[in-house]
Amino acid sequence: MWPDEQNGSGIVVFKYFAISNRGRHCVTNADRVMINGNVIVDGELTGSAEERLLAVVCDGVNSCNGSHEAADVAACSLRIAHLDKQDPFSFCSALLWADEVVKTKQLEKLELSGIKTTIAALYIDSDSFLAYNAGDTRIYQLDGGVLKQLSVDHSLEDEMQTSEKADGLGLPSNSNRVTHYLGSDQSHLRFHITGDIATTTSCGTFVLCSDGAYAGVPDSKLSAVLSCPSLTLPEKGRLFYALAEANNPSDNISIVLINIGCASQVGLDLH
Image 1 (spheres, rainbow, N blue to C red):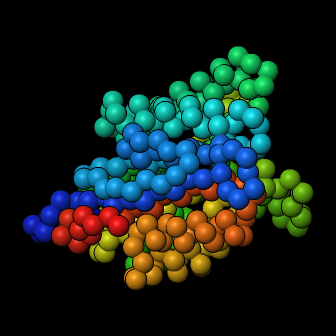
Image 2: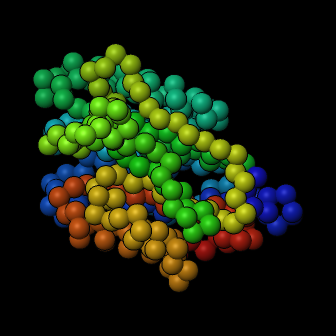
């Protein structure tokens, strides 16, 4: 169970902040962020939820003109799953459905033939969480001052580093190429799933972010930002965004921060 859920101190509250923007040097934003049915393209979203929360970050791959359409499909499919069903495993079915819709769109117009998107989603309820991703959009958890990555980067570099084929071999120039995503030419979508029963003894923080965010901010600096007691959740998110934009101005940037606790612990002052 999440902290103090059973000791009468209050219901479980998920306090969140999200920001998504095109970045300093990009013309459009191919990222999409969705939290509990609310989709944002450019801007911020701040709020709280009780008992359960679904957060999604989609990152349209490459600079294809229609990449945002793939991200739209993915975000909307998870939005429908969240609104219609409370079973977290229904979101896995929604991902598979979204993959098929993206592939159908690829066939509708020549200019959409290359659209695809990565996705990371986090479902949390009163006593557990489920995190899943396809591509290199990441999910982190900060618990007890320790930041750990829950997602798996589906890139050529990651696959080579975890393969015996990497022994004694240098990485190729395209090693950062994403290998799994919605809209892949593979016959079946592959995605990574991890989850756990919550056994933390203190309020935890989850992070979802596109590669445009973490590429310019090392984990050590991100951990320091998230652990700063003098900053509110929105201030931490905006600082993370500013650091990412300063160090990686040529990509879209999307960030979601989620703080977990009981009403008596986190309060309802979101600003």
